[in-house]
Length: 237
Image (cartoon, rainbow, N blue to C red; front, side):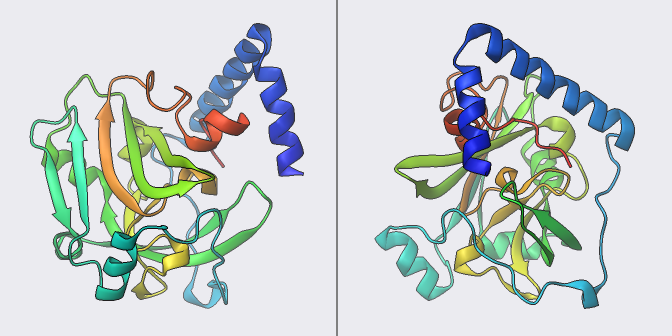
């Protein structure tokens, strides 16, 4: 069903009028969602006994490269997360650097556009802390997430605006249910953007890039599935 819906959206978006209609609908959705929930309202959090017995992998379940396989086997000693773009002080952080920063743990529900959900406990550093450390410039309007995985031959990426970037539950997770993040769930680092659907939570994270515009990034629609299947850029829940 998700594939049929996506195909229908793509056909509508192929026309100028249809593209304008989808953009207007998405803009309305984003504004209505934030007006009702409040810009910093928290997504529901759950108790430990409500954690799902398993948390499935979806989309890419690994990174097909020798470097990734070597890093996975050794605990990711040479993995680096860059913070770059419109920042005063670009950063390159090791996994150990990230673990040593103040951490947030949250038990939340992951809702996939395909119709399944799971509850998991995520631990990581708040994105806002890294953005403040790097000194995001006033011209920045979006944060783009770069990933190591290639899905169906294309580079996976996603983006959010500064409201979601500074939301307290938006974290760079390195643990799931008290253990290092599994390979199928995006090891060593993945985003959690708790007030949006699962495709907005990119895995195998390599860089965080502050930009003024999404034009010229991918097909300019803000994410892998937005470019290829007509998914909405704002996927608030």
